[in-house]
Amino acid sequence: MGNIVVAPPNRAMIISGYRGQRILIGKCGFALFCIEEAHSLSLEIITITVNSTEAETVKGVKINLKSFAQVKVKSTVDGKLDINSIKLAATNFLSARESDIEDALQKTLEGHQRQIVGTLTVEELYKDRAAFSERVYEHVVDDLERLGFELASYTVAEISDSNGYMAALGKTQTAIVSREAAEGTARNQAESRKAIAKANADADIVAAENAERSYIRRQQQEEAQAEADRLLMLTKAQNRMEVNRADAEAASAKDIEYAKQKQAIVEAMATQRLREEEVMLKVKDVELQQAVNVARREAEALKLQAEAMGEKERFIGKAQADIIKMKGDAANEVLQQRAEIYKEFGHDAIVQNVVEMLPGLAREIAQPLGKTEKMIFVSSDGSSASNLSKDIIKAAAQLPDAVESLTGLDLKKALKRLEGGK
Image 1 (tube, rainbow, N blue to C red):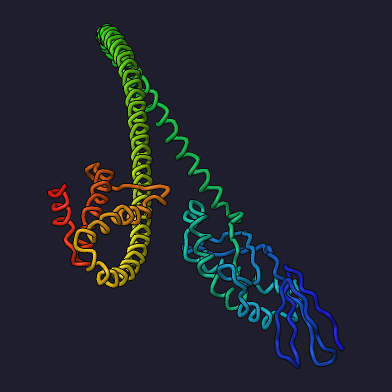
Image 2: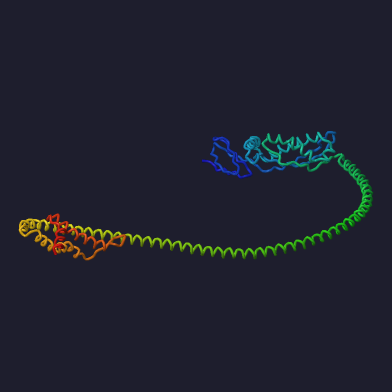
């Protein structure tokens, strides 16, 4: 259990006891009953009147000096909390009343003030109070810091004496000032008259010089204005020339650009037509190639068909030839059998019999061609049909040789003999 201790920003609350010493400024804390105590120490400015009565100067003149000093606990250094100075002030004055603190500080300040007065003359004090204040500040600040305080300001308010020294000093100073003022007035008046005369002469000279300079400046200004007008006219003429040239160039550029655009359009159209013609040529090439391929395929198909038909005809012809051969072989046997019989009839009767059989053989050879519905001739010289007729004639012409090989009968000689006998 304990008390809550609140420390405002203008007072330092010092809690001491069982948990040691703690200093609170602008904060709150907690002090335990019986074993901790809380005391406050003011951090506000204390204004102290320092009176030094019958204080002797370095020449023994006694004076009365009144000044004001503002003192406070040194709580901060460079914006940071100075705990050590607060502890030092608390050690020296924590249980003291504020009046006792002011009295102690007043005695310290008054002692230093008397000490500094004893090192100066009345004249020095009278003429330079700021230097006196600075010396008092320099001497008292160390003692105040040892007490935990700092001197915020120190000013001398009044200096007087009981013997009329200050009044006499003032009268003397007043007389000196009056004399110096009269001398200064006369001297100033003479200097003023001299200055006025010189100023008037100088003014006249300056006026003449100014008039001359003004005339020269006016002439120069007129010349400069004339030159500026001339340059302006030249600039305007040059600008008009440049504008006209720019307009002409713009018109020419417009015509040139129009011609370029027109030429570009013509070139683009020609290029487009050329590309269209190239595409059409490619299409025609493709169509022609396709037509050639179709014609080639049709020719190859016809060739294959013709070859198939020819092979078919050759196969049929071979089969029929085999049949004829078989018939011939059979007939040969019959002829051989007849030969024995024909020996009785003689050579002419045999020839007569063979000749009668030749038309039948020719008919048998030509019979397969009669069954052919369609014939396709493939030839490079256009002589396919005539070659067929020649082949048939050659086949018929070979019959006598076939008869001779089968029967040994030479029909050609027999026919010649028949023709001779006829």
